[in-house]
Amino acid sequence: MSSGLIARDQVERLVRASLSRSIGGSAGSQALGHRPNLVVNISARHCHLNQAAVDILFGAGYQLTAMKKLYQDTDFAANETVSVVGPRQRLLPNVRILGPCRDFNQLELAFTDAISLGIEAPVRMSGSIKGTPGCLMVGPKGSIELPEGVIRAERHVHMSDKDAAYYGVKAGDRMNLRIESDCPTTLEGLLVRINPSWKMEVHIDTDEGNASNLSRAHKVTLVRP
Image (tube, rainbow, N blue to C red):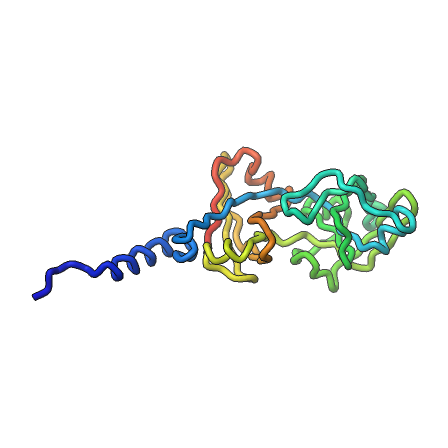
């Protein structure tokens, strides 16, 4: 005759399944105590340069100098800036360079920045610059005409492997960001990017941050769609 009691292992499986559904992540990682620290930062217009471009703009052998460290330990905002010239001589001065140098040149703009320059910048993942518009960059020692590299950076989230396991996602997946403020907003389709050394961080641009009043948000939540 059955006692009507559920075996302990069955109870544990049910609890784990319930946790997985409620947090949208891995019940196993939750059991291990890993809980990501969600940080959402506004990424203002900036550029990434290779060393050859830095040499032209600032002089042969010039090395970028750090103004401040960014949230990811490997990155910094440089003291150095450039002026960007678009079609019909439209100008954006003092565009910050982010270091260290990369192996490609890229200018990341918000939509309103692109309008100001007169450039139709497509939404792209960082590094995906083939077929994108170019621009003229002017530094204190010279100028360089970029044949491509102007993008509106796709909204995205940096994650470690543990963070990805918590949410139950993999590189290339999409997530939604809910911002609770006096202008509550849900930003859809954030691209998941994963690296073992990354701290969890969402990047949105200035247009998105201003529209949602992110600076006064009292809660942000990252969920799978």
